[in-house]
Picture 1 (cartoon, rainbow, N blue to C red):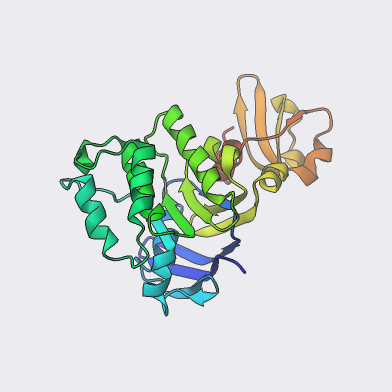
Picture 2: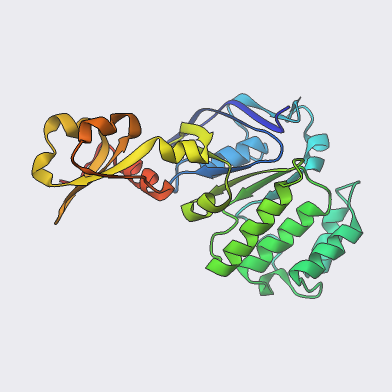
Length: 285
């Protein structure tokens, strides 16, 4: 059974439309949710959690409709969103005591254990913690009520490389028992290449791809060569292309690589794929 199933989720604003977003996540996996700023990542996550009321679609957690069983299902979800300033002036220990009242399954021994592991001082105010320590604190809260599904919005944003690497290692540790899953949005695509099993790619409110990380990367190629060799037929096979001092570079689908015989062809990074998709329709020549 999927731990999370999103079906045809939609939300319309005056200048933005989230359109029929559908994907699912099995237990024991990490799914990276990617897209440029404004693509719809946060709107989707908040719609899943009913923090934003969607205009259509449904969300199932462990096979149950979320909005019909919200109080029950929130017990098994751990959430870290970008809006982490609400408790800024409170001390860590007090925040934990308040939050624990909302979770019948709260495990104080687990909370203390993770605080020790992450070196969280109960007497420090939230505002006094670094970005990385704040994220670890909210992760500790989620872990202390035995959450099975973790939903994170840009959890590694603002962290230095060492802190990001530490957090990604924790993510991988969380899912290795096969009972817990993570859905997290990020614009730091190098993080995905280290830990994600699946990639869900959204652009302008519409899903472009939902697949394994390896298949996502393998579906594309970067092509480079002399500008004068890129005729109109070949331009038509590029997702987008860019002219530069040494020729051109372009993103193509792997199935079209045969048409570019004689050009330099390389595997792309996830960042390459996002950049070239964002440029489609406005090639730089």
